[in-house]
Length: 197
Image (cartoon, rainbow, N blue to C red; front, top):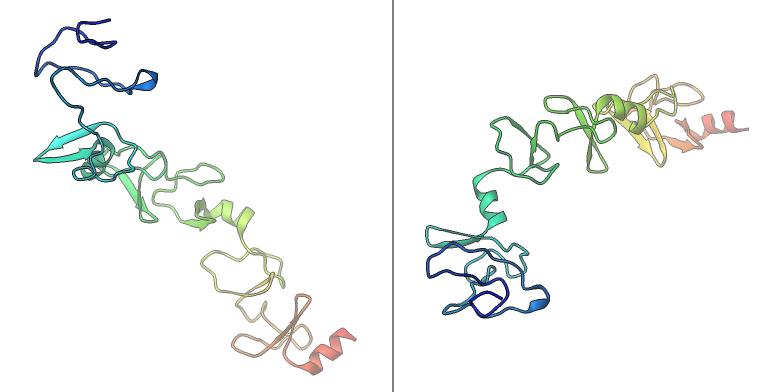
């Protein structure tokens, strides 16, 4: 045991550098001649429930270490680390290291590229078209993410005259009333009867 009366105490005086550790199973002994600074003082730090234990004292304010870093540098949405590089990208209301803003499916870097958010995850356009795009019921081709489409239940169509048309008479149904039955579109009851009987 060191000279301070508790395990780990050593020689030293006021103003000397020291180390801090969690109490663990040993309890929290009172330091000789002083008081422990609560690293999460609710009157001075950012949150009473903050798990941060390092404290930065600057300009008469006390800020938990993680939050002090956030005030100085942006934090990456991919790895949750501070970004020290001058080059990074901003997307989806977050900052990203260039190498961390990548397609969720194939890991290609998306900075400066077209991407689609699929289930709150960025996906490159080729992966979107291959795995996530809605397939047009009429032509069986995927619908581009920037293209207009019409959806009805689980059925999707390109919002173009050659796809969104009556299954009987081929009348364009864009902006018109229609009936959808088993993926088929009809402009009228008569067309439905002709096709379904």
